[in-house]
Image (tube, rainbow over all chains, first blue to last red):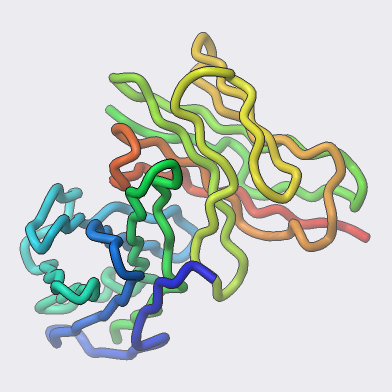
Length: 114
Length: 113
């Protein structure tokens, strides 16, 4: 049990639509990262938020955006969905307390774009 | 370019046999290295990590990994595999312990009874 939850578990959308995925992490985990994992591939870093500000971004277009809230929840928003956006989306929150300093992953949201 | 390569896409071992999963990385700075395991329907679970010091790192579930700078490798080992170890294993590298990880494509481990 990582204490990181994601909703919804599964989601089906059509091309061109917009989607919002949600993540809730443990109290005190002030860093959250989002990853995209295509079928049969390793996760790819989308972006990271630290204290509600974007703190690094991978090679993803601006239609991927995020928010982090003071209550340790966060969102990943994807506009103008494309077929290639079909993937498992993972969020990970980081416990920076010493000596733990570990990143915990949620179970993911499976997004299917038709 | 920064990258992680896991040469073996799929490995099958018999229960009780030893296991070694290979990982090679390309990284410009001192790498922080990780191994994660992913079971079906589950998120990623950290097995172990290496930052500095002793190049042989012990992790959870009886796993260990050895960092070899000269070979740019960080191979994962287990002396005796259990059926419950069947899963997907990912090697990752990052700029410090920042959470911004580059993952390999993964190795699927199948365990024969």
